[in-house]
Length: 522
Image 1 (cartoon, rainbow, N blue to C red):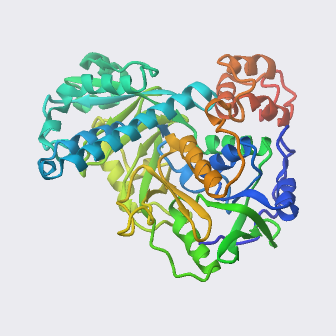
Image 2 (image 1 turned 60 degrees about the vertical axis):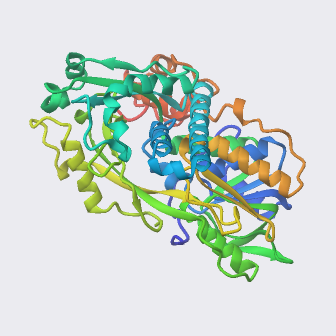
């Protein structure tokens, strides 16, 4: 789907960031540049990550995004960089099925692949929390247990009916999978639970204990912007509101794209030795344009979309520094209840369907989330539809590689897929999750370098700080208050949102003419 064009009339153009070319300069490079080594279509977390990875390996990179960076799936997550406790459980449940007696080797391979995915998530979560402290932080998440046996058992296996008894051990194993780099999981008693989560008073008298574990939390849109800005600062020609309207072909191979500048309203060509699709749930739409460019039949679908709805409630529905997980909802989904920017974020649903641009959350899914919330809240705190401050719906791209097997593909996966089309020279990446954006980008560039015979250095992103890292330290909020004259809440917000670039934001603020606050809006 396309968006209306042109856009941006009357918008204020801010001064360019130090070290980052302005959008107009980036578009000029796309219009008039020589052939690039790599053209990336899509500026979400993976597309921006591919541009960053390839550029830092010494390749020349162009990256185009039809909307704003992170305007689609990458900004509609649950805001967690989680290591996948659910997938650890589904791996165990899958291995213990009685049907595996007839397929033991396949069952073991499925279990190995699932555990490998969880271990990769742990590694990438550790990369983010240690290398990018300006973008993410630890958040404790509570699992309340009101009995020592769950009926019906989660994940459809009777062993998981005893999950409350096994939980302390399971979460210590979960901690160990990250080499204990996260804060340790622990058990909280009923009295501590009532003090920490007074909103749970309806069930507090029946709570046996609460299991607490840690995941990383981030502002997904800001992380995406940091990746894109870092790519730009390293030399990538990356621009938003530039849409691929079609692709260029020579001798049956895709060699570039017809690009529409949705701000100026005109079109131009961008050529590259290798083209990469990072369209998330819209990947198949790009693959259809690829087929049209080479006069081929429409390809077999590679992505099955599944939408997830989130709602935002007033902050008094949960503590400021701890979330809650319902691991056994009425239909078996995981439901997170998280503090988010002074509010409470609740999600998510999981409904198969074709991806849409700028979708509206279905009312029945919004109501389902509210009903599930009500199970954990006191009768004195009645959650209602009018409490919903905002809601959004995003699509998870469940991917398969249509060229992975002779039978036409493999089952859809929660892990990512990188597929190279030898006939057209196009590579696409789909699937995965926010936590593994860097790993996905590395895998894509590895395939592109090999398939296009490009000369490139080894991957450098495992130790690369992202935009905003320089100048960031834990005392930055205090420094902003003391030297910038802002309030404590503003200092905390600027530090968490912009990292070391918070000083650039302050430089744009106007003096108030008052003793306090000295800058900003009085």
